[in-house]
Every structure is written in structure tokens, then in C-alpha cells.
Amino acid sequence: MNARPTSRTHLRFVVLVVALVTLAACTTGPIGQADGELVIGTMLPLTGQQSEAGQAARDAIESRLTEISAATELDGIELRVVHTDVRSDLALVRAAGQELRDNNVDIVIGPPNSPQNDLAADALTDEPAAMYLPISQPIEDQAVMMAEAIIVDGHQVVTLMLPAGTTAAVPSAMERRLEELDGALASAVEFEPAAERFDPEAALVAADDSSAVLIVGAGSPQAIVDGLEAVGAGTEAGRTIYVLGNTASIRPVPGLRVIEPLASLSDRVTDRLIVAALAAALAGTDDPGTISTKLSSVVAGDTSCPSFSTCLTRLRDDGTARFAGAGNNGFAEDGAPIEVPYRMTAFTADGEINNESSRMLTSG
Image (cartoon, rainbow, N blue to C red; front, side):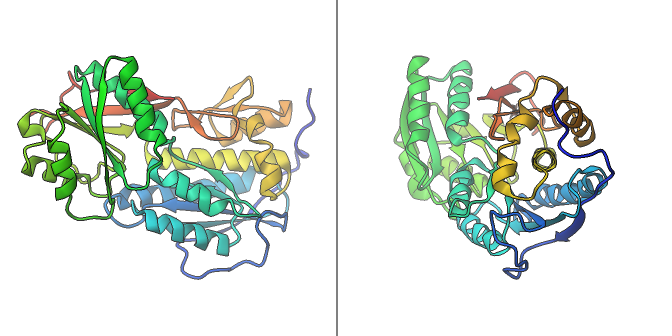
């Protein structure tokens, strides 16, 4: 039997919560070093179209802190949670990353949308680096999933619409998978996520001979859908429009498909909080570099456990566990999400869910 991470003595975090970052540098401890305080930062949509889900996720994190405080094996470590607001705005991700670094964050959870992942990682990798637990998969994995789904729906030629500056690996991954399935990518049309109108982009889509359009990572996807309809490139012209990412503003109509993770944002965020807390308990320190080395022991063990308390017991007994949380996805050894389930929803003419055309998808 492996050694336990710490003694069974009942130990506790001292919990401090900062509701929203407004002032920088509110702790003196340096990033990336053990200083007696474990600072966990979040990047959530606390305002804007996704604010309801973001605020629920924030509240869910705070509700879990009592359990962690009561059960953790870290004695004398203060846990401080700092929330930042990123909405669907890429510029806000950069600002949030700087705010979290100014607050000497050790671990970061978020942001909610895949196009934001690379920006978040870049903002947090300057030495000393914070540990990053993304909520979403890379867009490349989702693009492959959607290529397969669109072909199954009977389409052969697809137009991809994605945020400006997205890595070229995304359309390449989709094009490669479409070609493997005897399909084709007509074009990849970039847009500015924060824009209010998308007339030039819609005109480019209209020029394609595609029967399906995939919109990824839009801040206001309904505005893009409206732009497509205005130029005869939308559902009324016979195209099927797939929206992946932020779907909060979408009006349900026939010919539209919305693709969302099966699990709520709250479940996915709290799962990562639990993973971070378990790794910290096993490491016995607030040093993020050491904590990151324990992630694989928390998510890739032989025995599955569904909660913080059951996994902590497993870690005490065996030194390893395989956390299987409410988010329904698996975890790679570095804590990144894998095998993520999604729900693709279609609609009837009266705006109800079309169960015959709706189904489950799995990415990566």
C-alpha cells in the first residue's frame, strides 16, 4: 500500500473568497512558490449573454469550499478564490490573465469557450507559471467531432466560421477529417467575435456551394445567423446552420443545430476545483509546480471515485484515484478534458426540440 499523502488528522483550509477582481496584487505571496496560500482563479462569463451560467458556476465553486475546507489534508494553508469576468470577449481573457497574475494566482480554471483557451494559456505561462485547468477542449477536437456529425447528417460540403486569429490547425483538422469521409471544406471564414454585424462574412459564405455552415466561438451567434439569412445563405435557403460554443442568444428554428456540452458549466467548473484540491492534498503544499505533478495520480488511477470526499479517501489509502465527476468527461494525465459528451439539438417549426434530429456527440 502506498503512503498516505498526510496524516488522518482533521485538517482544514482557511477559505477566503474574492467575488470579482477589481484591485490587483492583493496578496504578497509570489506566483509559483509555496507561501502558505493557495490562490485559485477562475475565468467565467459573469456578465453578458452567458452570465446566468457563469454566475451559477461561481456560486457552485463557493458552495464547494466548505466541503474542501472541512476535509482537506492541507494544514494551515489558506485557500483564496479570485473570480474574473471574461464573457465571450477574447480581449477580456488577456485582461483577466493579467489580473489573476497580479493576484499571484497559483491555479486557474476556465475560460468557458474553446477559442479562449490558447489566450488563457499564453497569459499564464510567463515564469513563474500558474497551473492551468481548461474547461473546454481544443477547437481542433471539436472540429473533428463536428466534421463527423455533419457528414452523418447527409452534407458533403461545409463552410466553417471561426474567430479571427484562430490557429490554422482548426480548419486543417476539419478539412482533413471531412476528406477522410469523402466530404470537403468549402472555406474557413473568420469573424471578430465582438462585432455587431457580419455582412462581409455572410457574403463570403453565400458565395460557397456548401449545404452546411458551422459557427464556432461567436460572441453573438444569432447576429451571424441573421446575417446569413439576410444574404440568402441561411436556413431559409436550405442550409443547415450548426452553432458550437455560446448558444445563449440563439432563436430555435428548423434547420438550426446547437451543440453544447452535456454537463452544465457549474459541473465542469466544480470538477476542476475538486481535481485541483485533490492534487494539492496529495502534494501537501500550495506550490503549483508540485501540485501539477500529482494530477495524474488524481485522474488516472485504477479506481473511479465520484466526489472530493470519496477520492480523498482513495488517495489516503492507495495514493491514486480516478476522479469521475459530474461533468461526465474524462481527464488526461495533465488534467485536460477528454471524451467530452455534447448534446446536438435540432428544432421544430414551433421552436420545440426535434428529438428525431437531436442526438449525443463525443469529442476526443
